[in-house]
Image (tube, one colour):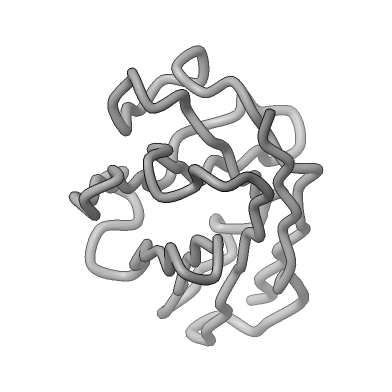
Length: 124
């Protein structure tokens, strides 16, 4: 069982930056593929970025070049550095963990564990 707790959300002006953190429980965190997803009001939850246990990274086209996902296995934490934020990045951001047998995919069904979410609001 893995428990995930996100932090770091908030209100920022367009062009600004935020860094989200996701603290995970569990001794085998280093083997879990991790992902970030987001959900805007009235929209489906969508893939943002993911990172494999060997730190291979994947990004949605909409955030590529602006967001960076990383992990610190010693601290059981995954990060999402968000730069050049746009109003359309406004959403609740969720951290997710997939079982070690899976890859760091883009589909929600690949992830078994989810955090409670953290709100990111970008003003224009």
